[in-house]
Length: 157
Image (cartoon, rainbow, N blue to C red; front, side, top):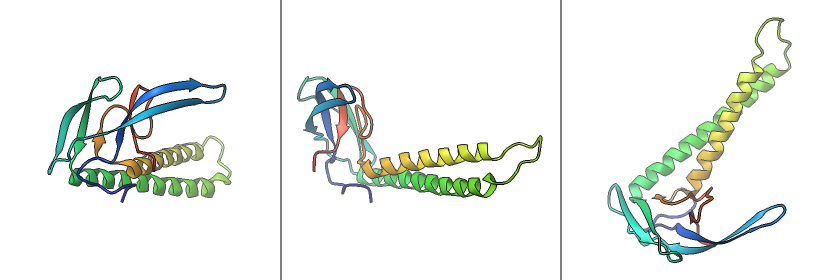
């Protein structure tokens, strides 16, 4: 389940942004990757600080146990699948009532159905994305989105 297997140490790396080149249509960021040398606890979580290999700034990390990480993966998977199911259900409902003529003065049901579809689509996308990348590490930034000098990243495969 998830993208990678769980070991005694996190598979994610923390990254220090080395350069940021702004071009007319995109931004290119380059990062230096460093391992997170915090052993997973047997139960619960462990909070420790590591010194950044580039700027020597202390960075605080929370590393979850294997069992807690698996629980988080299951929670993200359930959220993602529920979102996909909701989006499919609301999408079918939109097509079912979308072609019908609404009586004058009656509310149009397509608006709330479209909001339900959008909410299901977004929760499905977020849930399945985090399920894929969940490694039981919390620290600066995120594996999916980060704008600061430090972030969490998967090592290049």
